[in-house]
Length: 225
Image (tube, rainbow, N blue to C red):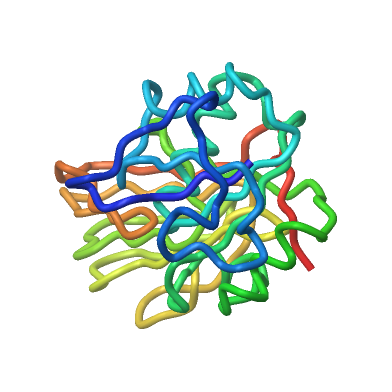
């Protein structure tokens, strides 16, 4: 089943019995033309995704959208305890997708669509945060004044313009930068004096005094090369 995102102004969820082939939706790669498709709003949530999962009970979903849309789908699979039952393929709508880079996925949409249809899924770490979200691409903590640890490794002490985080096969990583040490582990914990956090391209609505990314106890099933 193909989950694709329409313009926020016009996109609406179509119940599965009213779904249409991907060929009838704009910007869908030709390889996915025959796949039953459901159009979602640009910020899909429980009321958009849960009815689709209930109606179709898919074994594999193909997410065509942004990193944030992929994260939204994974949150619902997590909440519904379907991480181990539903394979997830990702066709990014931009070549700048941090999720595609983090997981070694094709940036070209035609190649990503072909992989989505014919590729094999394997378990990869699900990186959660303490605000109820998941990290699939890039996390950023801006104007950080404080400390950050990746497991037992100190990666920041003092003030840095930004700390970047990314998921990967070994867990969650802090990326090397000015004043930031590279490290990989099960958790990245940050304590600070009010910082802005951006996750998968979406800014958290409030400044935070602390933030944690951590590996969930169960992996998700990603279709990848």
